[in-house]
Image 1 (cartoon, protein in one colour):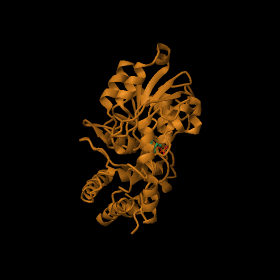
Image 2: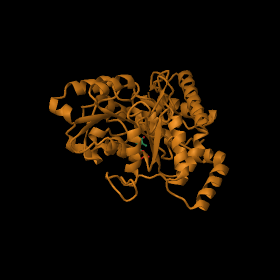
Image 3: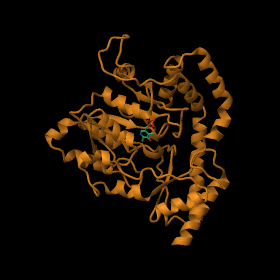
Image 4: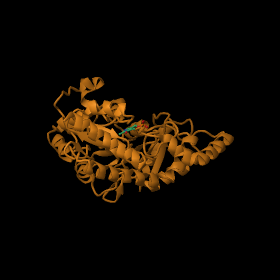
Length: 380
Ligand SMILES: *Cc1c(COP(=O)(O)O)cnc(C)c1O
């Protein structure tokens, strides 16, 4: 049996007619960049994310970059984020010239630990506090960070909050949706996200009228009116075709999310009845809505051997992420060392993402757990 990590073809077969019709309309119109399709997607996403505004951009990475630019973060500043995330989070901070400061994650959720955030800020000198401009929590794997304490600390210190919600569209925290709690919410339409385009794309949400206007200007080289530049922006525009695809998929998103949640429940029952709960730690689940962009388990030993074993059995898995940011070569100038963030380092060595996409069959889920059981019964 084959169980790929993700199978976008089966999703496409359901929406194919709608997509081809939208493609035809875009091609006939020969209107390719921004325009009415992007504007209507912006309204739909703002509504979906419980935010006032949304600005379509060229990728999730550019969503982070343009948010940092709109918050006037520059080489004089530092920004706090987590070391256990996709590279774009820390990379974007560096690209505006600022210095990323890392704080460790919570061992259960893999999201920013509010205690570590508080400890780091408390230990800062006055000069360090003056340089610190904001915090970028990441809602990893589809579950929101513990935002109340993070928002409180940020309010106390007057810090901007940029939520990296690239993996968390529709995830909730106490009734609020990812991207609506900070000053900016950054989303990605990379094809492997829960709401993926047919190429690159992203969007920024905000509740601020002022930031909304600024984001719109920065997206088109800071121009307003055309050819008059009071700001230096970039080309962060979203394509009309990508917006059309995302609009169509958005109608299905809650159905797909529900299927992912059901797969998670099925995995939990299967792992339990296989007697694997001593060897495999399952994703921690709060009451809040988790959208399961990834279903990530933690194993005590032999993670890489398990991965090879599953691969040989036709099961796709991935390690998100094998090297925490503070140990990346390109960040060696930040002078972090091994041991600085033990929770992130442990996660990087022991976690494994299993297939969780909506179209998985019961037989496929059973096969995955059966193979994990076979591996550990053989080896332990
Ligand atoms: C995917 C992702 C990004 C970047 O999105 P792109 O659209 O690929 O540029 C940023 N942060 C996180 C946490 C992501 O998962």
